[in-house]
Image 1: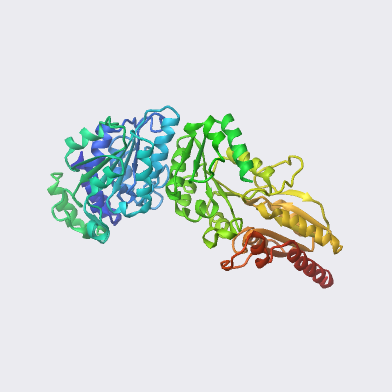
Image 2 (image 1 turned 30 degrees about the vertical axis):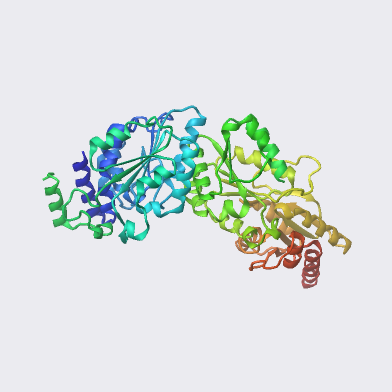
Length: 263
Length: 312
């Protein structure tokens, strides 16, 4: 499924001429592990109050979420071909309730974790046991609001909350750690009172093991530092930050799909 | 105002299990009763307003009715983007309550003055803005906001404001309340400065000018039918607010007026001028500086009233 989604993302970026392909590719495995193994949701009943909530806080990777939701059965995969077209429900970054299964309009960074905390507390107050998954980018952790959220979630022992950080080591125009010191990243979250894990964000087994185990018994919210590669899966995009803004031409689409074993 | 707010809040929490109260680490002891009876619905969000507003949005999206409360300057402008994106863009029914609006905390210095908030929130699509005139309107506004299915901002003074309404008036969002009848000029007051409008009317009466006084508690949406009626009947209509004359009630009425066919009345806007207050001074002193005292208002209104009569 990851390969299929990556191939689609390359096509979508090419057809729509949209940026952020590298950021999309780095979080594909996190999305696949979440939607096929961890997040309890029913595409036929996307507004079930008991469902787990999944927020892609790094809204610039919306195409990856669209492709995931479509392949998971929330809406037709045909809609992906209309990505970013005038009048399409699928914009470069998602609007509120633009498609079934989409929980939050994102794009401005540093909002998703705080909203997720509100949703998690609402669950507790209303005696619901749903879990809240929030995926952030490493660049997003530049935002002060992320650290406000990081401070309050452990105070409320929100063990049903998990944030997964797609740590691809790049932000828009530089190496993440050269722009702002994120490392030691896992220890930061631990010292804030989170149950923190550090894993290979492209290892589906490792991802599934942790994501399917929420709460983890620690009584704390969970932070997963998922080490990823920007542009993962396509040799000439991997770890090359030009693909934060570039979109591929026809030849590059073909090469990418060949590498992914799709043609 | 804040005592009335805390009391009404506690009462409403007993009636509505969806009500959540989020505090930005203020109101020491003020919410003890609320905490005692509804401990799981009280969240001290700390000194972190951006996170508080987003949390409130998440709660509202999950079927609760959160009220986010702290000092007015910080619950509005500081977290404006969270209000814009998480609350308004999602049409989340979050109630934002700011205490110490305008010059209420004049002595605390410029960081705590709040004279731009209405302008900045008024431009957000779907936002409703209520500035209660007295403790009675505070209670009514909170009740109405809980019934309203969208974002609401309630702008409060501090404590000790006088009660204007001796009996409970009919209150609905977007409908002004005529507090005193009058035939020559009209004074439209909004928020905790309202007693100044009433005193200005008394001054005008002494000058032989009959002044209608209206509590235009809802700055957005404006009571357009009432405005039409008022502008057709009087020589001068004055807006009175403890907020910048840029973008507040005066700005809103001026925008409305620009779209109308010429009206009988001239508009005068009373508020703070386009500058920071750098002096040390209490609320009364600051109001004097900005010319928003009963005397200054009555003086300007009476002058324009006379000119407008002669002009005819």
